[in-house]
Picture 1 (cartoon, rainbow, N blue to C red):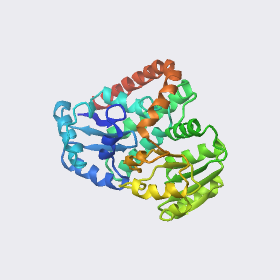
Picture 2 (tube, rainbow, N blue to C red):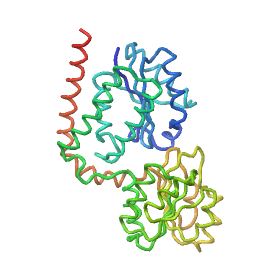
Picture 3 (cartoon, one colour):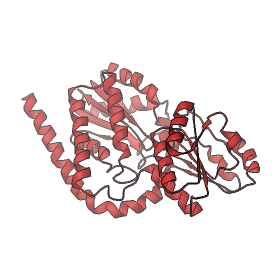
Length: 341
């Protein structure tokens, strides 16, 4: 009986693969139910973000038995039939707990030390908790992971200068345009990542902000808060002529912007340069738009080069963080052993 984690992330799989494994929130409760009904997992949590998809389980089975079955379950649930060697990784105790603590602390993120993953991990845990998919062991492990993340934030400098993926996207915009002062920005999607991107853009002096979202009230709330203007998700094309930068992070299952839709819009814009930053998984923007003149498309994987620049500045703190994690994992396992004795 042990906690096992199995999944894939930005280090093992490109976005073209990760998007095929991504779970919408609405699909997770039923998937957790199916997983537990197999008898393979007594407790389970599914984490699905733009950079990773992971399943955490407490299982009565031995790791060598559970891992192949979990791999098959994950691939089958996403209808993925291609080879997964080198793509899907797995960890058993104590490495599974070390991995969970590293993820919570931002040590396994594209941007080392970023804090956004902690909120995403809490959301994944809360979703499983609400649907009674967790129990004693995962509850204890996840709550300890949140405590360790807080300790690392306060006792180390791992997050000094750290920025979120959204902020990396904004920095890319500044590299392309040099200044955002006179630029019109369209943010598609009013979720957490889009909100962070919008706030970062406005803090860098963006001249005009447009926000569109499938739920119009959410677009209005975000635009009002940031001094921008809300658009209907189905009417943004009418307002596209002045747009210079698009940051897209919706939960749409298909492309919200493709070449056929963008090509006539570029003519209306008189072919001024257009920067498209797609931080959604599954992707929001069709890759073929890159073939249009004066269109520059970057997806979540393209942001990694910028993130690597920040990685160098925080490498010295990693060893200190790993020491803290190692000590906390040993304490957790020792405490569990005492209660089971």
